[in-house]
Image (cartoon, rainbow, N blue to C red; front, side, top):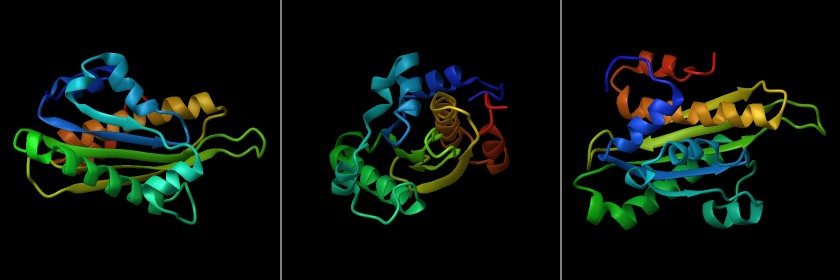
Amino acid sequence: MPNTKLDTYQKALAFNMDRNTYGTLAEIGAGQETVRWFFKVGGAAGSIAKSMSAYDMKFSDTIYGECERYVSRERLHAMLEKEYDILLQRLNDTRGDDNAFFAFANTVATFSYTQQRTGHGWLGIRFQTRPHEDVSQIDLHVSLNGHSNTQDQETLGILGVNLIYGARYLHENPIELLLSLMDDLS
């Protein structure tokens, strides 16, 4: 990708147009704000195999296994492992030679009006940089300082796009990747 700074829309569109990457997004607790960007800009059929949100705790436990805390690194890792494994099981034979696979997940508690507390969450991506390559993984813990669920959701969507884009295109320069996470957020 070129060295020009892209906004969130441009990052999502560039990612969708890259037919060499394919994966899943699983988001719990704040809607599906990251995948919404990829659907909104168009062309997601070439990059997104599946999106889902197991919002109910019983559904989440059934899919990812039980854990002590739902907004935790433990839950994030269970989500990434499960989603990435399913992706490989179902698509490695047909797409594995041409596509680098990824699984993105987040588990989040947004601003609470009843408890008057800010939100926090875990975001992560398990990804290949080339087909059949070993996977890498990035985990982020975030504090959300919004004063409404809407602000937290918008932040998560942008941060998720930045993380996915950065993992794909900036993985060889960790400092640039880290700095890019704040694009369109500051």
